[in-house]
Image (cartoon, rainbow, N blue to C red; front, side, top):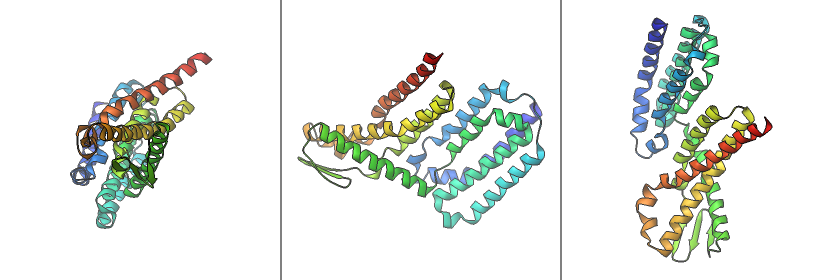
Length: 283
């Protein structure tokens, strides 16, 4: 077992070394790095689940050199393709394809060293590593647009419910003394990704059925949109009634997102509790 573990660690280090350059360049790039502030935590979480479930995963080991080796070769070929397409892909998608190739290589090495039973038993932490991927740029832009549009509609609803006088033109709201735009930066993509990943982990830890996990994952998006809208409306009201600096700079605008993230996290926790209670009632 020790020799197998050392072999797997060596292959993991090789995979990590292969993607160091594209990931480092992406995370150092202004305007892009904020989207991926979470990814360095993903291997730690994945390793934690592999360790805590080790008695279930690392039993009945039967190395599968043929299938594992084939998957590793596929990972190497994907990495070579990423190198060839580096310029056409651009920084973000080059890092994404390179990282995916490393994850495929890592999956193959796990299968080769530990076998199919270990792979099936460790499927959650192995698949969880996909969150280590930088999101392909076209998909990231689409998600940001959906969050932006959803947040705009929720802001519109909150202004209407609070009887606030306003005029709307697309993503722009004209209010007494101030005009705001729900820009892409207001989409809350970072907190949305963090909340979604937290939901994945919470579902794995606390929920015992697939339908409950699907409900939890589906609930993440409206919670995120509601949280974004509350932040935008709160900052707008503070700017109108207290100080315009709440919109033009200020701590709450620049770095106060976590203050609104905490209630969203509590709301997500409430959903988990309700789903767990549903199962207890049936028993």
